[in-house]
Image (cartoon, rainbow, N blue to C red):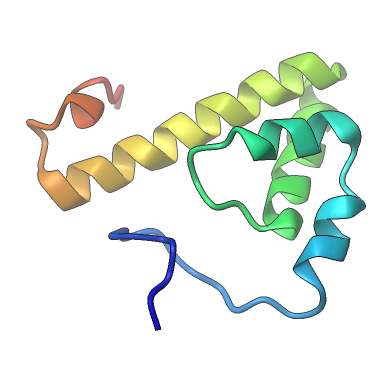
Length: 95
């Protein structure tokens, strides 16, 4: 069976429960962020990352900026592993 994840080296998890119900329980601003996300985030994963960022930042907009940075770091890491350090996405990585 074909999957929509494509080639990736990022960890995958089996989901339990109803993924759409979990998505529907996300805050509105987080659902909007997930709808435009590059990676296929699970509702539980994105909620945990958002709550952690929100606790640190204290502001929903800044928490979403943290999620953007996290996602960028994950894509960069994956691009480097899949296509090498010469890939444009991998070059922007800051160690």
